[in-house]
Amino acid sequence: MLSRRQFLKVAGLGSIALAVHPLGILTSCTNRKGNEKNRALIASVEKVFSQLEDNSVLLPGEQVVVPVLDAPLVGVASADNPLFETFRRDEVIGSQWRAPKEWMPEAKSVVVFFFPVSGEILARHRAAKTPTNEAWNYGYGKHGKVLDAFISGLTAELDNQGIRYFIPTKDPSFKIEQHPVMSGGKEDVHYSTSWSNRHVAFAAGLGTFGVHRHLITDKGCGGVLASMILDCELEPTPSGYTDPYENCIHCGACVNRCPAGAITLENFRNLKECRTYASSLRAENDPGYCGKCLVGIPCEFVKP
Image 1 (cartoon, one colour):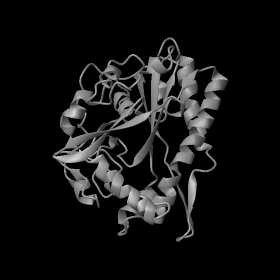
Image 2 (cartoon, rainbow, N blue to C red):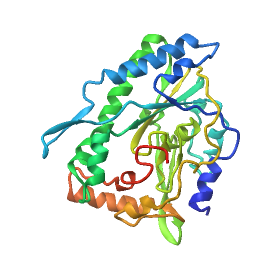
Image 3 (tube, one colour):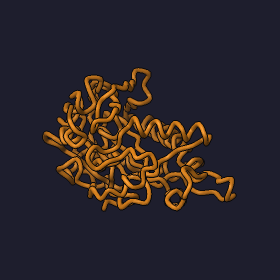
Image 4 (cartoon, rainbow, N blue to C red):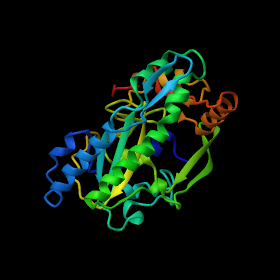
């Protein structure tokens, strides 16, 4: 069994064509086959996010309304990126992984969105001395609904433009399997899934992994991901990194922040211990989320 570091080192092997784009930068793409569609797609992303009607949440204790998510970073990878084949290895994701063209034969691009959690929510969660707090529980807890609204609006725009899309995580055949593994002499779990937003985000140039196993982007790690496959050919840009841990400074701040003691610099985050602790929070606090390893650390909202 490979160590955590070796595990993600394998994911970094091979030739990679990557793109990292804050909203608006993709408008400079010069793809000869689909320039008009490129511009229309980015305009749609900006339009849909700016018009979200329910990207906020009431914090009942404070009686204030705060935003849930900030505007996304957008990463693009070619559907033929050779990195996708490395994900099929058992020590990375596993044989259950399906490459873009296995989901959508006419696939040309994979587009990934990283939405930072709003600064108002992050600040409250960072300052909280309790295991959970209302900003994180109600704010972060609502991100799924916001993502669904964004994806619904964007796919409607894509339909209008005649761009075909596929969202693996929404497909009935999408699967996640759990396999017991040993990590640092302790029981752990490995998730083998048919599609991984974190891994395709790495392939799409949005960021690299950290000791806490979250993705560290130019806007930090305190955010959520979504992705889709398109038949629209977008132009990836050269990679901004060469190592799957390049954005992590291995400072140990997330190790100290973890209330479950589930993170070590040597073996990274133990998913079994993390899940067990998170389940206890949900039982005691409904809703109850942890996420302490995402705040109060150098990579919370910037790339260190």
